[in-house]
Length: 83
Image 1 (cartoon, rainbow, N blue to C red):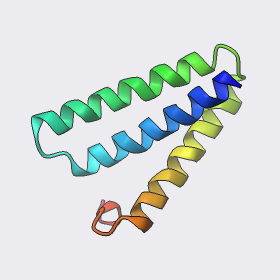
Image 2 (cartoon, rainbow, N blue to C red):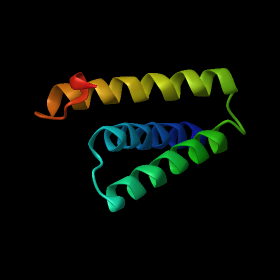
Image 3 (tube, rainbow, N blue to C red):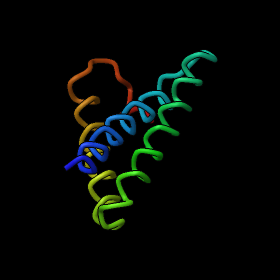
Image 4 (tube, one colour):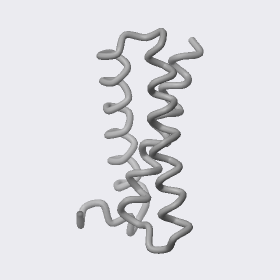
């Protein structure tokens, strides 16, 4: 169960870095984006120690995609559609 939680948290960080890539305009924001990238992939790697890699990656990418679309839909001015 712990590895699935890690995978979900990794996907949340994935959504954060996708937002960061789109919205960052200062050194601090770019730094936060970099941290989110590193954390998301470290958590994914940790989860794959017990979960099958293909399953974990598919869930990670799927949750990240759904989360990104949800942010674009629910947050006015998120600007994802302009990318």
